[in-house]
Every structure is written in structure tokens, then in C-alpha cells.
Picture: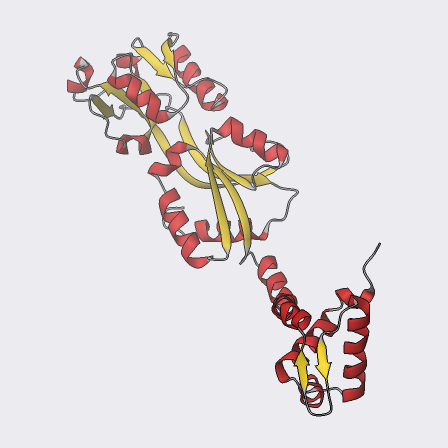
Length: 309
């Protein structure tokens, strides 16, 4: 059975709370800017709808009954929440309150993510930020399923965004070579691609970064080589750990060089002016272009204002 209309009318609960605070119908009517008879009638109708007496009335006194006393805090809370709704709606429309579900690749932890999180929490305390680490391919799947509002992904600099998505680039960096510390090439004054392309390689699977994976293979093909993949690993930190175990060398993002793993050295390649360049990776925020998420737009504005973006 649907509840009677009066029981979902915030106005009548405000009237009840006002009478309960004043314990006088006349003073309560003045505060409500109405005359006393309609207020008296409204309270009587409420009691009839509830089937309980809320006030004991006499010529000299108005008192709350035990039922009225028990109901008062709930009524006051209801009124407070109801009157806060317009401001909350405006705040939600401006992205000041709500929830932002954000996934990120692990490498962004070496870059801007810590500062972005600190700044966003400081400037948007009403937004609950939910962070989940995941590879780029997993993030795209989650985005299609609506499980996240946005992802921070890696991709090749010339790779178009997937259909139905928008993307905002927040960083760009070249690939470096990670070598075992005891490898003879760590002593070389400069390194060319031809010096390292026959080395066993620790590489990420193609499913993780297909465009960059393919560009690396194309670079090896230009040198007349095929990558000698000794081991695959998903996370860049895991790849570096395997390099320290001397399973091979690895191509990693420049930011990963902040991960100072014992037994690993990082080297940049010498690239001739007229020679083919190594792949360049971009970090971007990506989201579903069909969805309007105000808290996400607030996050994007904050990131755009960060130095170096």
C-alpha cells in the first residue's frame, strides 16, 4: 500500500518539528509565517495518519508524548536533509561532491599521480576518490562495462583513442634500456640500438601495450633482427626485477628509472639524427565520451593546471 501523501510531505514534518521546539502552536505558527488554525489542523491530520498522538494539549501547556519525543530527532534530520538537497544538487552538478572511480597504470605512480591525488583531495573534499591499479587493456574493458569513470593508460604517441572514448594526454616519455648491473654494456660511454638488439629481452605482452609492442618489433625488423624474448612480464616493476635477476635487458619508460632496484642500471640510447627513432609512450586520462561525469571534469581541470601537463 502506498503511504498517504502527508507522510511524505516535508512541510508537515517541519511544522511538527517547529511545534515540538516551541511547545506552543501560536509561536510555532509565527516562525512558520502561517496562521495558527492551519497549523493545528496539519498536526491533527498528521496524528490521524500516523494513528498516534504526538502532543498532549491543554489550555495552559503543550507537551510531546513519548511517541512525539521518539519521532522528533528523525523529523529534524529529515527536514535538515531535505533543505540541503538543492545545494547538494548544485554541488553535484559542479563536481564538488560524489564519487570518482579512477583506474591507473602502475607507472603513473612514478609520475604525477601522487601529486594529483593530494591536490584533488585538498580541493575536492566532498568527492570520494576510488583508485584501482590495472593495466591499460583491463582499464579499457572496465570502461566499456561502466565499472570505472576514467582510466590513466599508456599508449603510443600516434595511437588514436578507442572508438567512443575521449583522451587527455598528461605526460610523454621515451623508452630507456634497463640492463643487469654486471652487464658489460653498462660500461659503454654510449649505446646504439645495434649494440643491444641481440640481447635476450624481458618484454611486456602485446595485449598490454599493442602499439608500443608492435613499434618495438618494427624497430628490431629495421635492424634486421627479431627480438629474443627470454621472459614476459606485465608490470614494469616486475620487468625491472627480472632484469636484476639477469634474465635479460628490457625497454622501460623513463619514469621507471626512479625505481632504483639493486642490480639494475638504466641507459638512454644514442639516436642518430637521420636514424629511426625509438617508440615514445604517452600517459593519458581516458573516459567514455557518451557519459557526463561532473566529478571527472573537475579532476581533468585540476590535472590540466598541473606543471608539465
